[in-house]
Image (cartoon, rainbow, N blue to C red; front, side, top):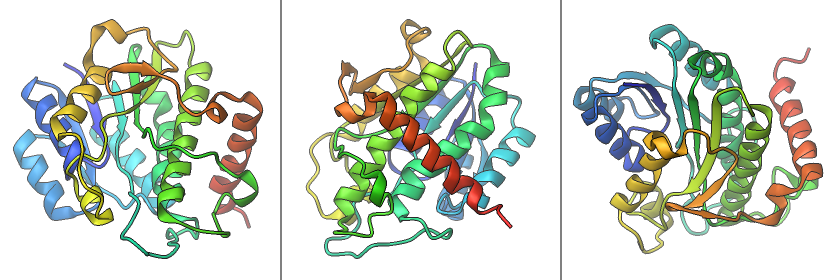
Length: 266
């Protein structure tokens, strides 16, 4: 049995993961934004439930602190929560901290949560970080990280997922030989989830396809020593070239740390 934190577990892929992992006997901490749906998942799975709005960095910090207090260690962190393309024609949205919303929830939140939980993951000895990304990726413009120019929700989503993939590769390098692995995946295309329904795109793949691919990264013993990889479903794949560029990743990391520390500046 392992201790697993799943973000975005109150609906869609996250809820399916929670059900499957609980049925297999794992101990879960489940996160969600909607208190009622989250309580339902907790009842179904026997999980510890922690509500947080990941558009707020302070609530991300609180989620990390409560996880450390209420869980007997963390063996797997699944960064699954996210904001999709948005409704057609919707304008640019900001997080509670004033950051572009998709960058905030899809990238800044998992970046910060992971960094805060790294001591617990390292203590586990054989831990996994699984970042739910996307095959829909776009190059990140570091000179317009908040997309103040020519905004589109689809573009913002795809840039945020590219940033998350680049961060995964950074983590894998940082954690080499620590016993902690970091991988990311595109679980499936346009599954029937609330996020996809809101965007009014048609569905392509089933939720079961995404569940199967993501469970593999969480529990498959053949992946015990595999780190720094991007998967399309269950197959190793190559992300957009920018994610592999050390110079880009260093600049992204520097910008990210500045954003995260700015709230605590005088």
